[in-house]
Image 1 (tube, one colour):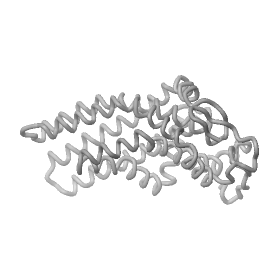
Image 2: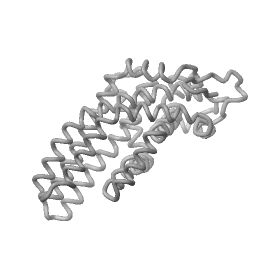
Image 3: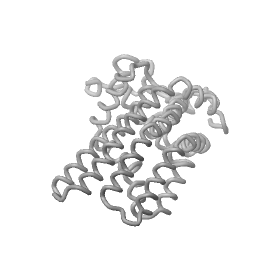
Image 4: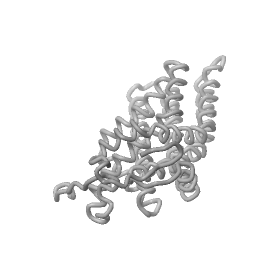
Length: 285
């Protein structure tokens, strides 16, 4: 199926996976270079964001007397800088979702051409959704530092951090769904984002798990060990980022079949799979 730098179509229906679970296993097993190349492309456009984040950590840890006002100032100004850099990262992530949609639908093309073609087409929308997430991260970061540093009440600290983290988590999940939705359908930005929030809330337990693995774990390792963070960053840069795009793409396509395609776009149900499985009336509702 997969050759380096190219996606090839399987013409024989019998050789296609019958379910998205099988397709997931096939891509992880056979399409290593697809996941690796997408991860590397996303990593290159994520370097500015990573550089500012690392600089932020170094400034806080290297301060001789890091009082509350200094830590807050560092987080505030670095957070502002990071907002457009999240946009730059999500330009690449938007393009990666476009390539993965082609792979999931068993469509041919060269990875580089597909990536940069999607990037050119959807750069602004990818940048905007990244900035939306960047603003939420900025609010979460500065609010968390503020309540920890300037409030002695444990309950207020817990509620403040909990509320901003919840908003961060849901917006992060909505942004991921948005990338898949916007590459699949022709919708207004607001419409795609609204659907993204709907899916993130409807499947909140999975949103929570995804956030914990892809955001919570790296952040926790930042506090634990610099070398652990570097190791996780290397895995994501070389393969993991592409893996997350694959996981979100296939799961979201399954949701599209259940809630959207079964009503409006029946020709797209189980696209890229060997056989269509009927969706009953209960699932439609």
